[in-house]
Length: 342
Ligand code: ADP
Ligand code: ZN
Image 1 (cartoon, rainbow, N blue to C red):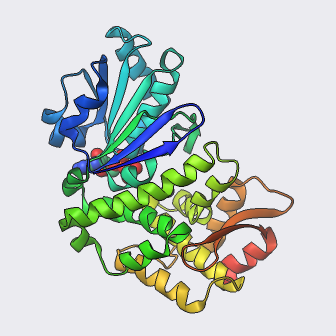
Image 2: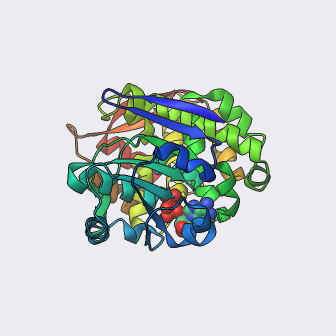
Image 3: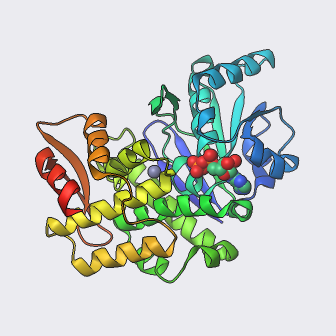
């Protein structure tokens, strides 16, 4: 078990990798607790939840909705939850985003924690204090920065995760290695999804490593004014892909990572053979590296989505493997590259 402290200005937040759902009670310290989860997670693990009222949402992105937020707040009110109530989200990224937002706004904020149950939530979504819901098809448009008291990453719960969700989470694991951990990248080159899923200790090691990278970056820049923007690696192009296709987040990010690697080669800061290693690792984990979507449609979505900063877009590029730089890329140059060079 590994306890990672996220160093924040106003409060303590800890990510505990390898802790077990059964020990959640220990972290509640006798407070009146309310659980938010989704149907799938409740079906498999509900019996092991501590004795608390449980609100069950539909699985999937559609639950990140203001109507659902209102329903949960009504439920909390009906049950008499006051300012001293505690809320625990048990689930993947959707449940964590929703729980964090409800806890941030209910009675102007109550304390909360997570049991992150998907790989994506354990290494990414549950860490860092960003939460939010969607509006009119725009993702995470309404949300806050509010830190959970704890994030329990029970790696044994990953055993029931559908393989496509593993793949999704792996895109963020690879992203973290590319941002600042060559050693982890080289380590991952020795594995693939089916092997990982069966090796619990390996999973704990990889989740711990990845969570530590994210926690470290968040601790340096909680409100995303500088270094935290490195975490957008693969997401500038990736979000645009996600918007115009029906690809899942992880696959879209994989295409974004491949795009960034190719652009980095063009900029002369990544070697051709390094790019090939990156594409191979993504492909080994069943992640796509060749863009099936029409690049001009993706490019249009990207420009529409991004605030222009004097005719350029800030892009996270790879300065070798395990190191990134943020550079403004001229819009025309980007368009040219997206349409012809990618
Ligand atoms: P993500 O974690 O990828 O952001 P979700 O919260 O939607 O997205 O989780 C992905 C899917 O995996 C959902 O259908 C969710 O119910 C399911 N899920 C999450 N954790 C587990 C688990 N430990 N076992 C089985 N299914 C899970
Ligand atoms: Zn992501």
